[in-house]
Image 1 (cartoon, helix red, strand yellow):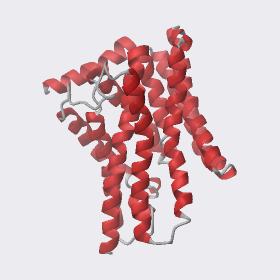
Image 2 (cartoon, rainbow, N blue to C red):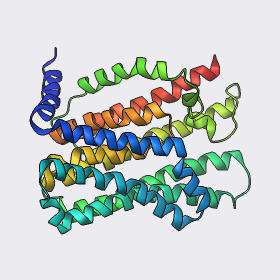
Image 3 (cartoon, rainbow, N blue to C red):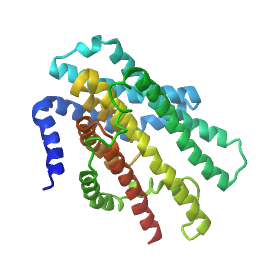
Image 4 (cartoon, helix red, strand yellow):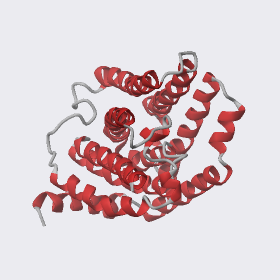
Length: 315
């Protein structure tokens, strides 16, 4: 076994053996199980978005959906570890609220971009380039406030929340990506998977036999992959590295709880597995201080899902 892979396994084992209390993990899993069940059985998010369909309401709904499991993750940590000190910290309260607000801005731009596009002429070329631009804008809405916080608070202490190649090695992440290939292939035979992917073909009616449509698809895929850089930056960068400096390992599972909620509406298997994948990548991000590996895995899996679904459409 390569030395770097042994080191990563040691990181995971160290957390499981020395940092994680089994009852805490069980509590988080039971809580998330209930939260996911309610969402997928009752479709609460869709119901709320339909009932309160306006810009501000959409922003508030997303904020609550993100904040609730995030805060509950910390509450369960404090209960099981009998450590309530972080709740006495003004910085903790600020970050606890600031993080869901920032990520809610992504939902805001998604809603706003659809509303704005409805005012433009109905043109397929304009639609695809506009959707690509919306990806860039929503990533900037996440990146800019976090970057400003880093400049003010943490610039002298660490690279910009994981944007570093120090202590980083590509090989173990490629192995992780390789492990995901058969799992994604199996998932690609499920109807709920094919109803969601490939994203590029669900944006607008396309024909795989049309060269012009293929161009639109591959252009969008480039921007779709770009999006995952900033998802990693937010979850494995900001939510861990900014929090870990002040609050230690308490930040890991609340981040994973938050991460699960952004998969609502996606296939159930993807939502459930996001907790475990997010937790593993989170441990490695804390130990290495880099999100480069997480970007490779996340972007790789995303494109793998897209092109696996595309093969089903072709054949």
